Length: 428
Image (tube, rainbow, N blue to C red):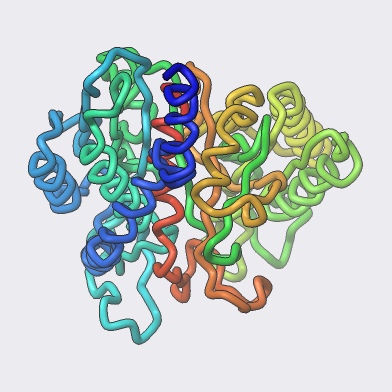
C-alpha cells in the first residue's frame, strides 16, 4: 500500500501540464483575450489627447475602468491624477505600477483613422495636441494590467497601487504638477509602497522586445536661462556699445567646450543644448539685453553639480571679458532615473516571461529624462517596451516628440504581461 501511495503523486505530476501552477500561463491567456480592448483603449486615448494638468477626460476614462474592476479609486491627485488600489487575498508587499497620461503641443501628421485633431491653448498660443511620446500606450497597458491582475486577485499576495500620472512632460507655466506633486501629496505613503515599476514605449525599438539597464538609465533634466546685459548702440557703430549677441555667441561655444573638452564622457554622457535665444527688435540696432535658454542632461549626480559650476564659470568669464554682465539660473526638472540593480536582477525573469528571454535586451544610457525619478525613494525599475514595426530601420523611425511619431500597437501585450508578472513574482 505504501508503494502505491508513493507512485500516485508521480503519476499526477506527469499528467498535469508543466505550467499548471505557474500563474504566468494564466496571465498570458487573460492578456491575449484582452488585447482587442487594450488596442481600442489606446486608440481612443490617442484620438483625444490632453496636455499636462488638463487630462480631465483621460482621467475619467481611467477612473471608470478601474471602478468597473472593483478597484478602490482616488482621483484629483496632483490635479488630474488617478490612483487605483487593489488588495490581494493574502498579506504581502505593496507594489506601485505607474503610467503617464499627458500629450504634447504637437500637431499630428499622418493618415491614421484615429489620429488626433485636438487643439488647446499652450503658453498663450493655440496648438495641436498629440500623443507624440506614447503615453496613450502607457495608459492602455496599465489599464490592461489592472484588469488582468484584478482577475487574479484571489492569488495576489499584498497590494497593487496603479498610478496614472498627469503632466510628465511638465505642467503649464506657473503650476505644479507631475510625479513630484504626486509624491508631495502622499501617493507613495498611503499605502506605503515597497517597490515601484514603470515602462516607456519606444518608437525605435522593435515590437515584441524589452530593453533594460541596471543603474542610471535616463538623464537628469535641468533647464537653464542666461540673461546677458550689454549696452545698446547703432548697428553701424558697434564700438560705441557692448553687443550681447556677440557675447551669446561666445558663451554658446564655451558651453559646448564643457561637453567636448571638460567632461569625463567615458564615465557618463553630458548634453548641453541651447534651445532659445531672444534679443533685439531691429536689424540696425544692437540691443541692450539678450536671453538664451536651454537644457542640461547628465547621468551622474556629481557630474551634474560639476557641469552647473562650469556653466556659471564660463558665462561669468566670457561676459566680463567682453564688457558685459550676465546672470545664470538653473532649474532642475527631474533627477537621474536610476534602476536599483538588485531589483533589476530579481525581476528579469518576469520580463523573460513577458517577451521571451531572447527578446529582453540590455539597453544603453538615454539622455532623455523622466520624472519617474521622483518616485525613487524606494527600490525602482524602469524599462522600455518596443513600439517600432518589425523589420523597420530604426534610423528611419520617426523619433518621439515629432509630428510623424508612430507606434505599432499590435504588441502592447508585452507591457501588460511584464507588469502582471512583476506583481506576482515580486510578492512570492
